Amino acid sequence: EAGVAQSPRYKIIEKRQSVAFWCNPISGHATLYWYQQILGQGPKLLIQFQNNGVVDDSQLPKDRFSAERLKGVDSTLKIQPAKLEDSAVYLCASSPRPGIETQYFGPGTRLLVL
Amino acid sequence: TQLLEQSPQFLSIQEGENLTVYCNSSSVFSSLQWYRQEPGEGPVLLVTVVTGGEVKKLKRLTFQFGDARKDSSLHITAAQPGDTGLYLCAGAVNSGYALNFGKGTSLLVTP
Image 1: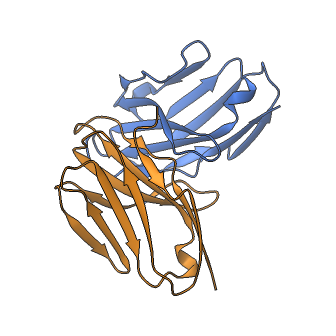
Image 2: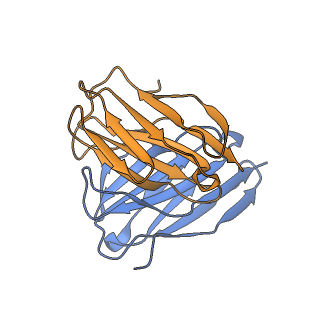
């Protein structure tokens, strides 16, 4: 069974530029999560999708971050414009359904904003 | 505000030693999970505990959920270099709600 795929693995941009990350969850998983993991901290949930609907985006900085999950499969997370403090690892995870089900994480995208 | 506090933050031990890491909160959780994250990878689930007082064993790893479901511990017996990584605890206040992660304990086991 293929795991959660993310791309790119690394990205370096200058502040005020835009960037987009892509995630392909495990086939059949209805729930998809985007997390931000700053160096030295645990992952922080940015947004949770159930199929193509948003379940929780309370911690998403909506003035600069956006995410979509068209057709309830792949998802993209965009930052526009980026700030220095956005430097972090962006993790995508999926699970068959919400709850205490196992979340399967992708390898993450490492973003450095200069 | 950090909902889950993990301690210690860093731990460096030699192969064969035992260790315990802690995950504490003032909140009650419906479930708590432990993950291990290796450099350059995403977290991988080790265990989920649901019942207060529950103890689960996974080979040399023993996980305990506090009676009040506010805290948990992970004990590793005879640590090996392969145990090196970042150990994260994560709790769900209610089933179906998002996980809250602690900052993690970074463990280094040297031969």
